[in-house]
Length: 194
Image 1 (cartoon, helix red, strand yellow):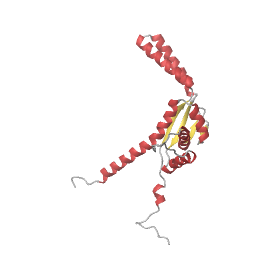
Image 2 (tube, rainbow, N blue to C red):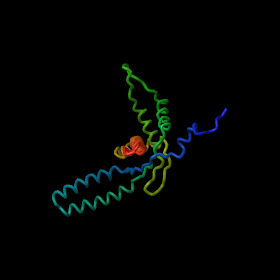
Image 3 (cartoon, one colour):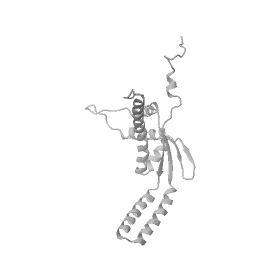
Image 4 (cartoon, rainbow, N blue to C red):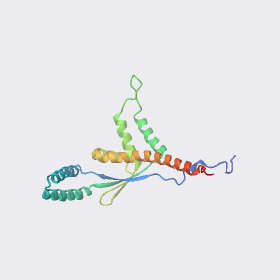
């Protein structure tokens, strides 16, 4: 027996039709040497400014521009998109299937670095829609093995940027929903003059 839709009933799938997930583009640099040289030149620039050495300051500025151009040749765009709770749970469950949780004699869960690594790689592969190379070539939806190579070779600071963006989706959406609720409550409450 099937009920016709009426004002009292609706198809729950309709709740999620047309929803969007947040997106973010993270600039991801891969050349460790250029980054370190940029750090050194910045220190030289600060020292030249303190000494009021105009020639050294100009030389450092020129070197920074050169390094920025070199760095741009190794700057990738990571295009990220927020994910549903179901997708995130599926990644967690895949890790737990391969690395079941173990507990010590006090019942505390024992850390498993291999499980943590697998989870990080799966999470990145879930959130990364594409990676754009400086020349415009595109890698669509890198898989877990590709992400493992990226994370294993990339600078820690750049990995931290991607992880911060992924965390930011959850935090930003949570804060946004709280603000929406506050706005709705404010707009729907009766005016004190009424």
